[in-house]
Length: 101
Image 1 (tube, rainbow, N blue to C red):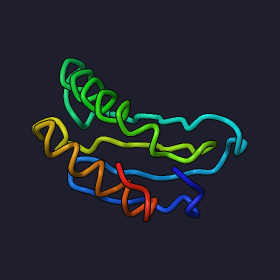
Image 2 (spheres, rainbow, N blue to C red; image 1 turned 90 degrees about the vertical axis):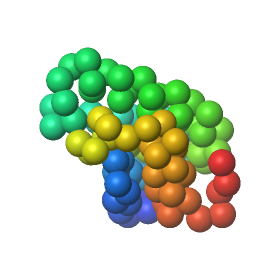
Image 3 (tube, rainbow, N blue to C red; image 1 turned 135 degrees about the horizontal axis):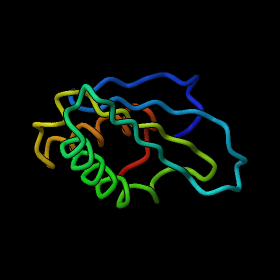
Image 4 (tube, one colour; image 1 turned 135 degrees about the vertical axis):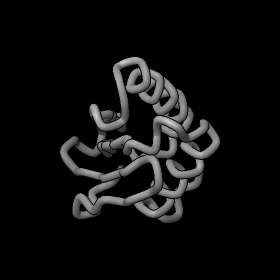
């Protein structure tokens, strides 16, 4: 996402923060952080796969040169895809007002 003073946006299963470290003509990039607190390796990998799939469809909405970091919280392990999508969209709308999915 865009440079918003690296302000974190807290949602239920995911946390999002935007940082400005890429040139404006570079493509938008997304990083995932899924720590051990989310669960064992199988659960963490499942959460990463689900988040990657959700973010893939939202990448075009991010401005060029933006860098988004999404951190999965422990509740992401039991959250359904719909809940993850809703929290991700809520975080994106708070970080980038006026940008729709």
